[in-house]
Length: 126
Image (cartoon, helix red, strand yellow):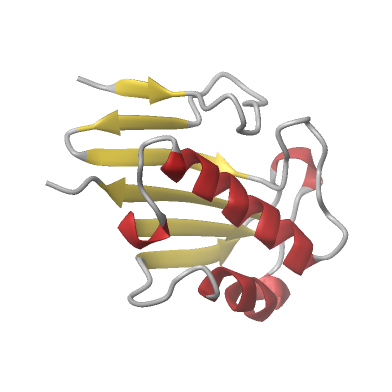
């Protein structure tokens, strides 16, 4: 059985999707962009944008009593691979120990003209 997660302090979906769903001991996080809970984009620079995305992921994880350490798989979408190093610098700061498995690649376009979108899968403790 799947359970939708709609934290009241999370960025609101901009299309017909659920921000996160728990199912089978996992939490599946929809792609997050630098949209805050008030609907404003945080795109001053790629570091600011990535931080907001990671904070959005943290909000979804907290709603299921999890943290970044529970992420097991992440996908990073970039508007351009030239942003890869800067995104990695911010992204890496959220993991004290073993970061999740992941891939990162550039795509032709992202919602709202953002430069980074990150989705993930977290595992719930047994």
